Length: 130
View 1: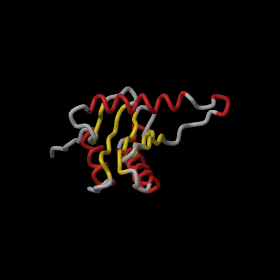
View 2 (view 1 turned 30 degrees about the vertical axis):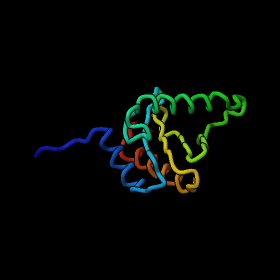
View 3 (view 1 turned 90 degrees about the vertical axis):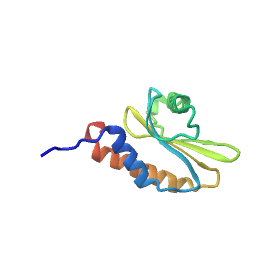
């Protein structure tokens, strides 16, 4: 019997597709490494996914660097609000981030809920990420 194994990228792609079904308010959902590499998903700029993922990683690490060290305050999520859109970034694991871009009017709480479902499923299916 041959056992098929899925790549990490394929597993993450499936989770993203299931937790973020096609929605015209969602522009992109991607998993990026904290070093700035695109791992799975899609970006709003398909011609430059490397630039998008690198900038998302830089923004998140910059936000983390501004926290109050004595309080050990952890960054829950990062929100960038633009004229017509929003960018939301949160941590999947110590090495991965999830990045969502959506219409400005989109309910953040619903996006964060879906992001948390992706995080939970990722940790269940890729146990070494915990």
